[in-house]
Image 1 (tube, rainbow, N blue to C red):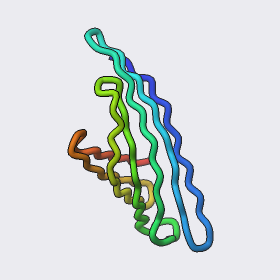
Image 2: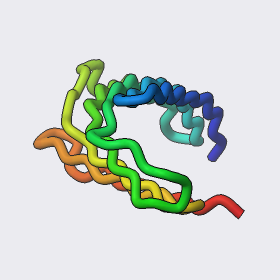
Image 3: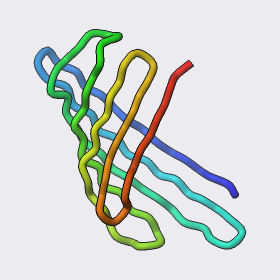
Image 4: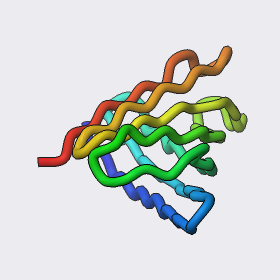
Amino acid sequence: MAWIIISMERMEIGRLEAYMQGFGYKKTMMKTLDYIEQYLQVGVAPYIGEYGDLHTWLMLKSKKNDLTSNWDTYPVLKFFKGNALVEFGYSDTSNWDIHLMYRF
């Protein structure tokens, strides 16, 4: 199995508001099946915090893979604190979309 992953997220933080936009592309190659997943996401932060505070982002994510060829759009909650990130999203068609990340 092999993966090719391209991902980018961009945050803009002003005095009173913050927003994020991002995209991702992942190609999975296996002996029996190859497919591509793509996503777009946008979101806002309801409040601005300092480094080390708990940061909350309200996101909207739209994801597509080559197996179904349909776009699936659903809400996502992102939580940052220090070097840790937790992300929860749910859709009726793709079920749970959960990501955990820690930067060393």
